[in-house]
Image 1 (spheres, one colour):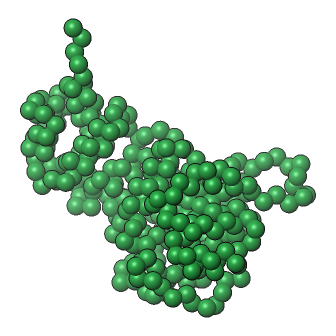
Image 2 (cartoon, rainbow, N blue to C red):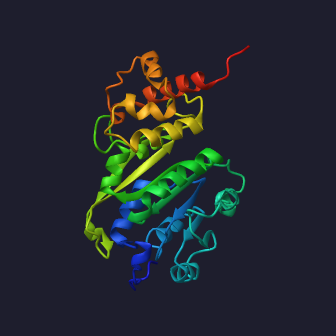
Image 3 (tube, rainbow, N blue to C red):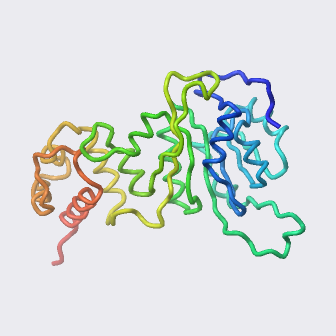
Length: 287
């Protein structure tokens, strides 16, 4: 059962605790299934952890607040592991791969259900973007995660879903869409949390792709190009690309992209094409 005592939120951790009634709606949207193994980022007082655990799935709950972590560890069942750590700094992959699903004795001869590693979390608004990048990095480095269902400030969710040519479209959009399909699942008002934030929230799901949505020939160059372009998004492409060499304008011509366009108008396919041509232009020519 979820305790009725409200925990004291700590401003430095950006804590806003999910109300029990809304936790049930979030749990329904997550839709846990046999064979699932979960990492929960920032479980707090366990508003989501405990009902998730009641479904029988194993959970690794990573909480940075030592007091909340200790309180939660004393209340969870055996198939929940509470780790006191900063998700942005700890390598969770070894712990995830060690999670085992709960199997009742009657099911000992039944076939194993499909195995999925999944992430969930009510993210602190001030850390949501770094955590999103960390989740994508984790998926790239060791492709365990199938998806991530996470609570974000509505404005961040809009950035994830943004289209080229809009002010919300940027580095986060491009990075996420290269590696995942994105679904908006649930809209939550400020009153769904304690204390109530001054913003609305959105529950989104990142469904990680088996391969990037576009072919990228040089990952490091791709990341460097995207950050360079969107750090000066009001410049024309021709000017923004000057740091990549004096002949960068020729790359735009070969890609058949108007150099007078702004970076925020580029599609993922166009960015990947620019990276490919930049990589070719910097490759040593055979003697």
